[in-house]
Image: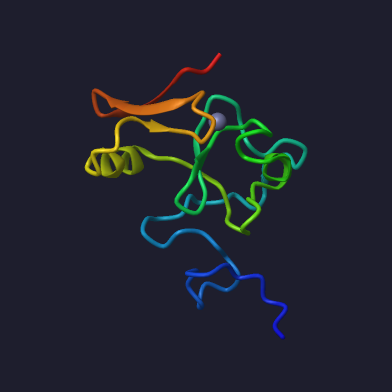
Length: 117
Ligand SMILES: [Zn+2]
């Protein structure tokens, strides 16, 4: 038995970090951590393990709203322009979050989030 909650497919040598390895991680400012009571910001799409979520409990999951970690143990990170550009090469249509409220696009070389309030 192992107490390691590492999800299938996660790299083994990341020291417990479940972030994707295909792109650089955002730099965390440890002196100014995000407020724990609401980690995910509205009107932003976050990437988990090959899934995209907005900051709604019905989309990211209520625990992810507060911890920034989804139910599979993956850190949710804000998407970046390169994620959208990569997604567009798949030919799957616009990059939307799971609930469909928000859509990410690249306009004039910049990441924009559409559909927020
Ligand atoms: Zn959503």
